[in-house]
Image (cartoon, rainbow, N blue to C red; front, side, top):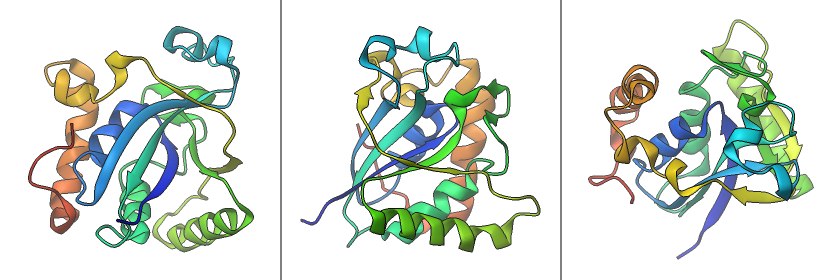
Length: 180
């Protein structure tokens, strides 16, 4: 099986984590911190907005089952890529919209994806293209948060509407059971 891994940031990692786990072809999802240092790669430090980290999600998938183009479309349609360092009430650089590349070819691909997505937005897309440096796994309580804590207010008011949007527009790409 061919595997591809992307690291994307779309605000709080709980949202993108929940969405990715529902997509057919996704084999692994990890909420992570990108950038910054190992010493400050923890939730409370990152929430301060001063550590240079982004809350991101590492998504591993089979591109023969889930084309990267579909993942990109889902990414751009389930968050606001025109909002700088903010997604709703989550404010700060740790909540930026970003795509993290590992090669010059991937950087060019991401730029082409952003350029293509721009036609669907009235305001300029501010999704950052950043080289992928160190990745630090987020604490266990942040992994698969939505499934483990569906009663949480954030899940109900922020994540559930995004999952409903996914169901409405991307139903053919949703798996039968959420990836654990």
